[in-house]
Length: 145
Picture 1 (cartoon, rainbow, N blue to C red):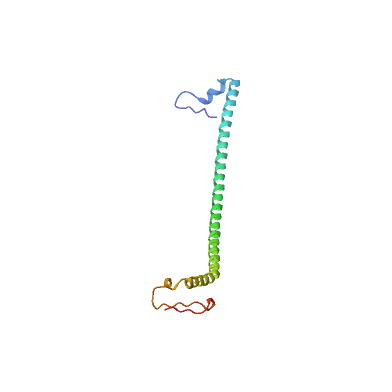
Picture 2 (spheres, rainbow, N blue to C red; picture 1 turned 90 degrees about the vertical axis):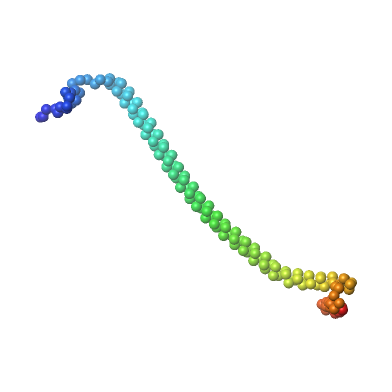
């Protein structure tokens, strides 16, 4: 066997612990060990809680992003439905107008002709050679000069 290696100073650490008793009592050592283990457990528990909180925040953020994407899709869909409803409303309005306008124009012309027929000749117009013709349904044809 080789002799213990000596360091640059005159103390051999391997030989020092061999014969001397421990400088701390066993009960004190157990109490300190218990305290250190409790502190280690507390640090580990706090680290686990922080990691769980971070993971929960990450999952919440991902869920909110999915919700935002779904809402954007709904918004686009509603915009398309709104545009389609507006187009259909315009088409219905045009169809109704095409049905009603000829009748309303004819009625307006008849009403205007009746009104002019009821007016005295002086109010009908001041031009000398003005002729007014009325539809046959309203009576005889009238000419004014």
